[in-house]
Amino acid sequence: MKLNAIQPQLKTISDFINNWQQEPWQFKEERLSDKVIVRLLSYKTDTFTNRSWEAHNQEIDLHFLLEGNERIYLADSSPLSAGEYHEEEDYYLLEGTSARYITLNSESGKENFLLLWTQEAHKTGVQDMPIANTVKKMVFKIRN
Image (cartoon, rainbow, N blue to C red; front, side, top):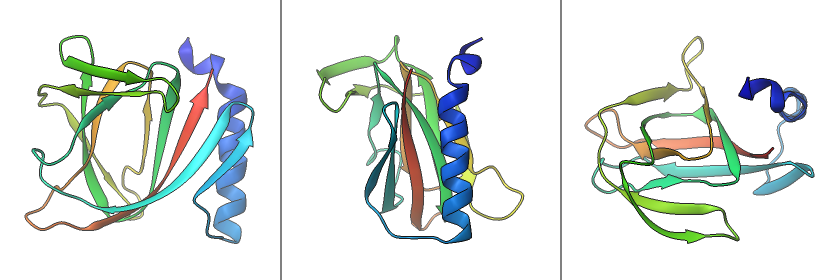
């Protein structure tokens, strides 16, 4: 099973989140281990049309929503049209559509985590209401 292969990285992430929740600090990016980096992001949601599809070849993403809510569309990357691969940042943009999505919500008891495997296309930051809201989240980049 794929999840078993990243158990040590998930433990590193869990420890980081627990420490951060006890005493939050500001950061942009931190290297937690040789296989895990975390970025703290903040942005406004927008319409489906104004957001971009992306996927990764090497890194697994774990999104942890802290504030706001956002709809994240999901798709297998193979039927979408792929753009140029940016090796250093490990991403490529895609074109296409999908009706599959999950809504992440920072309210207690709601979905606020999402694990995205390599090659799993995702379009983040889509507003799920008529008006945009500000999203604050941690994105963990996991190398297997």
